[in-house]
Image 1 (tube, helix red, strand yellow):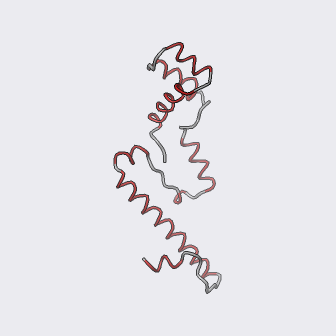
Image 2 (cartoon, rainbow, N blue to C red):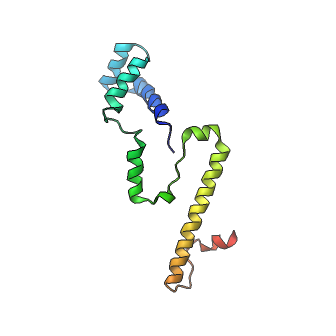
Image 3 (tube, rainbow, N blue to C red):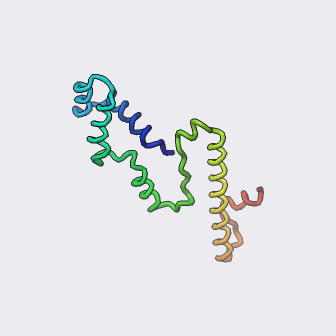
Length: 130
């Protein structure tokens, strides 16, 4: 699940300012005394744009996942969409899980058949129930 990077960054910024032991973050409050656009811009420059904090650089994280998992096995969900349309998103998730499980079971069945096995792989009976 991913969140809109702008919303996530601002939310994280406010949390960091409330809870941080980092002297740099405490300095922001000493300097500005309250949340201001200037304070947020300074935080962005210091932490985000500098590359020091990459937690919302989703492209970096997704590329790393794609090294280990095929693209068709990854379902990207946007947090704000779940909030707006939870039923639609949950239906999409259920369909994705079923489609992926079905494709994996079919691949296992094909492999077992190619090897001449008479014993279907675990979960093969699920396809017959559908």
